[in-house]
Length: 91
View 1 (cartoon, rainbow, N blue to C red):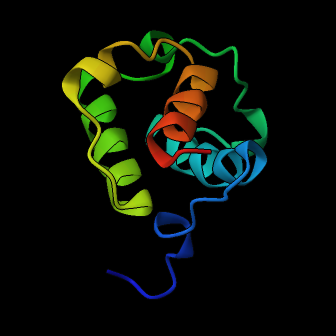
View 2 (view 1 turned 180 degrees about the horizontal axis):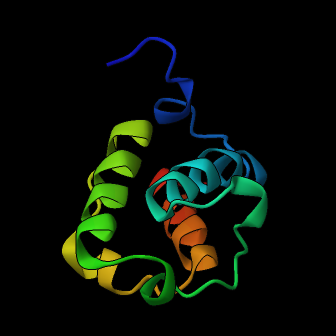
């Protein structure tokens, strides 16, 4: 594990801290600026299937978690991704 990745081992992350890590990952995969990314964006409108897989892999690596296919399929918006990561990380 990357010693700089304190997010994967810190169970007290706030939603804002998780959001701060999630938004840049999703924005990069979507080819957007992080400042343009909104929680209301529908993932189906900003990602193709390959980008979705890449984003999930990046999130798993960043937070050192496994995101099940079922959990990923339940995430419809950027806000859903942030909330899903909060649940996975116990935030």
